[in-house]
Each structure stands twice: as structure tokens, then as C-alpha cells.
Length: 580
Image 1 (cartoon, rainbow, N blue to C red):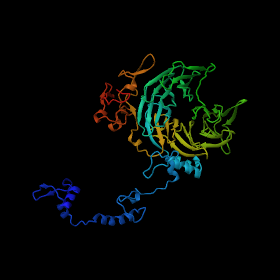
Image 2 (image 1 turned 135 degrees about the vertical axis):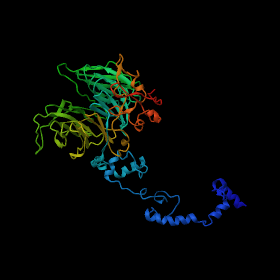
Image 3 (image 1 turned 60 degrees about the horizontal axis):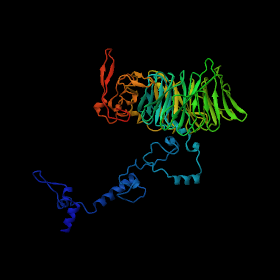
């Protein structure tokens, strides 16, 4: 009787398989029937199964402790282990391509918990501090590949930059638009409208709270990076804006934005870091007035980051800067007690047997490496030259471009690496220490030939770099898998990108059709270069449309009298931050 009670407790009727009679009727199962049905099962049946299966598994995937069998084992003692799950991979030097200071962006399955600070400090005490060239060979940069080339503008794109986190990319184009893209997946996140002419320069604040864009329409527009709302329209120049820089100087909550113009003036705009409000009257300085005078570049020397401009580049550690000239020379300037002293870099000098075929040399771009130990110059003879920044001696001549180079971008923390891009459509990764080419990428556009590269920037973590070209493309390069980028379209525009705008007295803009500020409009639809909507799977990539029903992702279309297909209206999407 006690055995029956225990059986009922351990095997309640509702858990036992039901019995069918000859008429097909179900009856509750009992423990006694179950015992009769499986009388061939011995008490040690499970043990015997393990004894038979484990030797077979041991031959296929050996356990870490031979002969030890456990139903609850893990790793190589797991009874359901496979050869793939237990594969031991010894990381080679090339596998460090995905590392950033020892941290892979996507940890592999076999990657365990990272060492804690105590273990790291103890290991450093035993082995000493590592040098970057010993930990990461430059060959790892061969594994950077082009993840995606996206057509997002209708005109040439001369400006590209990352935000301070490296998770967003900004492009500024001759189609008057500034666009925001996701670095990790290539999604089009937002379009900033308002400028009436080509975008000439962009800058992101050190707090990563705002982006400023200068234009040939003589204005500077500033947007909030959290809401995409316009923060200011700054009008202080009488000609095109040529450069923008946020100052690293902090004085309480006071910050400054500098701008230079083709009118020969430089303006310093004060703004408040708490309220994000700008003063409308800048501190203005004018170069000596004479015909043809322009200010084309600007740079701040303070702070941890160097800021570059076409022919002017500050060093970080000492008060030095390098300037390039159209006379075929560059100079490294240093402030000394006796005044400014310079070291001449003559582009005409070539080590034998190299000879120049260009008679009138001019410097097209200059840059420092990340440690300020060398200066890199680009000239119209299609060569890059690496100079010792202290002695002015020529260290390397880098050859590989077939047209003029206007982009030199040093790696954010590896002093050995430099990115260059030119009008020949080539983007090249250089090893400055050895003076050799590591990897090159050619921007070949099907049916259109090559696209000249106009700008290139590297992300702060060194995992990505982005380039823009003459055909309106954004090119995203980096380590790791391209699977996330395969899920986006090759052409990405919002259907509201080029709709007419109306301007108020302060030069702020409203969408002409909806009479709303662009950042307050509903999430737009994603279309191709011809204005045709993308399928719903792409529409879900638009911020604010992730949770929409399928019918809300299909816009209503119409045909105009001229036969052009247009969007008549869009369905209301769920309420999101900054939307209606």
C-alpha cells in the first residue's frame, strides 16, 4: 500500500500515458499498467545506456578526463558535445584583426570571461608592458574589408565624419543634405535639411551633443544629435564657410565653435553646454583686406585630438604645426624662445633612382602620424612622402596612387597606420614604419567607371573607416562580418529628402507640404534613387517604423499628369521621440 502511495505521488495520473481500449476510447493510465507495458526495462537501464553510448562518444569526441562519465558534465564532459562545440582554436596573429586593445568586437563562442584587473596587473608585473607593434602586427589590417557601398546622395559628397563614440557616421553633400548613418549596420537614421547650397564642412561637439554644418550659403546650422532638432542658424560670414572646429577649451559651461570663411574672416561662436544655446553675435577677426584673401582652414592645438585641414595640421605633444604650399614645399613650424623656427620639406627631393615627371610641384595635403614623430605630405606628382618631423629627413616615398591625393587620415591610436584616398578611386592603408602598402581598395562603380574619393575618416576605436565619393556614395570599411550590412538596401533615401522647404525670418525651415519642422514629421519611407519605395523588410529599418504592422509599411502611390510615380500620402506610424 505504501509503495502504491509513493507511486501515485511520483507518477500522478495526469503525467502517465493514457490507455486506449478496443473502441479507441482513452482511459487514465496507471503505474501498474506502465510497469507491465515496459517489463523489459531493467532498473539500471539508464546506466547501461550511458555505458554503451559514452565509449562511442569518447571515440568521436574525446573527453578532457578519459573514463569519467557524468550526466551533468559540461564542456568536453558534456554528453551532447560535438566536435564543433569542443574545437580548440589557437589564435594566430591574423586573428587579432578583430581586436582593439585586446577586446574583440564580437567575442567568439569559445571566448571565455575576460581577465579581471587584478589578473591583468599581475601579468603585466611578470611580463612587462606590451608595445602595440608586438601585440598587433600591421598585417592584421589586411583583414579590413568593404562592408557596404551605399548610394545616399544625388551629388558629390565632400564631407564625412564620425561622432565621438564612432557609432554614427555623418555625410555632407553638394545636394545640401546632411545624413546620419549607423556605423555597425549601415542604416540611414536621419536626414538633416535646411541648407540651400553645398555642404563644405562638418564638426561634432566634444560632448557628442550636437553637429554643426557649414555651407556655401554662408550659414552654419547646428542640430541636436538626440532629437535632430535645429539648435541654431548662425549668420556671420559674407561668403562660403570653409571650415568648422569645436574648441576643446572649457570654461565652466562655456564652449566655442570656430568658423572660417572665404571672406577672410574667422568667427568664434560662444555656446552653453547645459542649455545648448548659441550667442547670435560672434567674436570676429578679419584678415588684412586685399583681393583674393580667403581663410581656408582652421585648427586648435589644445586637447588630446589633432584637428586637420587641407594644408595645415597641428601636433599634439609640442607646439608645432606643419603647413603645405603650392610652391612644392612644406614647413614644420615650432615656437621657440627666439621666435618661430621652421624645418623645410622640399618635394623636389627624391632618393635615387626616383625622378619627377611633374615640373611644377605643389603640396595637396599634409598630416602628422599619431605620435607626431613623422609628417606625411601628398603632392601632385602622385607620391606620398614620410618625413622625420625633428630633422626633416625623408624616410619613405609611398607610391600607389594614380591621381592627386587630397585625403590623409592617420589611425586614431596606431602610429604606424595611415589611410589615404584620392581622385583615382583608390583608398590605401599604409604601414608608415616599413613604408609599404598594406591593403588597397578600388572604388569601381558598375556601369559608371571609378568614383573619385573626396573624404575619408577613421572611427575613434579604429574598427571602421568611412569614405565618400563623387557619385554620392558612402563606403563603410571595417573588420569582422558583413552580415548586418547585407540586410540593407544599396540605395537609401527618405521620400522627404528633397521636398521643398519654406523659411521663416530667422532662416529656420518648415516642410512646405506639411507645414511642419522636419524633425517633427512622422517617420519617412525608405526609397531608392528613383523614388520607388523599398519592400517592407527595408522599411522596418527606418527609426520609428520597427514596430509597424505590414500594411503601415506600404505607402500609397499615385501618378501625376506627367506620368511620374509619386507618394500621395503615408500612413500614420506609432508615436516616437521627436515624431507625431
